[in-house]
Figure 1 (cartoon, helix red, strand yellow):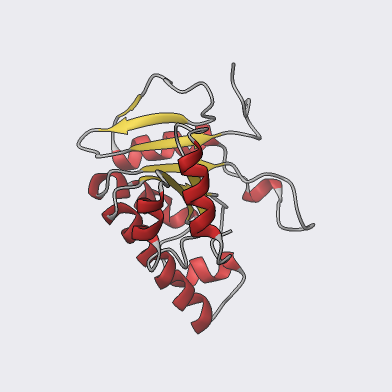
Figure 2 (spheres, one colour):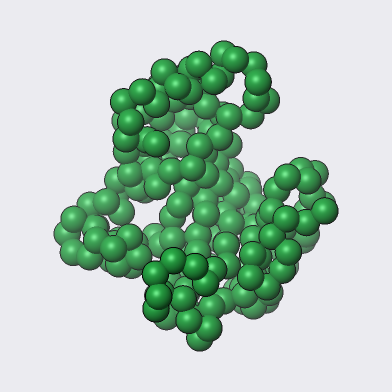
Length: 193
């Protein structure tokens, strides 16, 4: 919805309606840098940002835009993320770990919680969509990733769930400003309770 010209007025109208306590939007953040301030002023309170890789080449490959165009898109996505943080949005990064594609930089993504007050959530790759994209050997379970992070990042403490609508199991890292979360639609129950 970010590319629609009516987005800002839509956010303002929904925000003024008083129907929602929290107003969030999911985005790839590619166009966010230029409009983050206006969206915040319009009443948007939170952003879920899809960011599967920090490396521009891997990001471009996962976005289906290899080459220079994809790397430019990666730079714009990162600028959008920074704008979200700078404008005080409740920011959650969503990453889909895929073995052999972006698994070598997942800990680097998790380490963002040391620099920024954000949640970095890892969502298990689901067997949906085009044939051939999901294979069992590329799947990384939340449990496997949690154990890997404990080895690479140190102790992780489970944060008691205070939002029953949240599908993520969140963990704190010592010295972290945010949390690392795991959403397990394949290996666990997607919607608990």
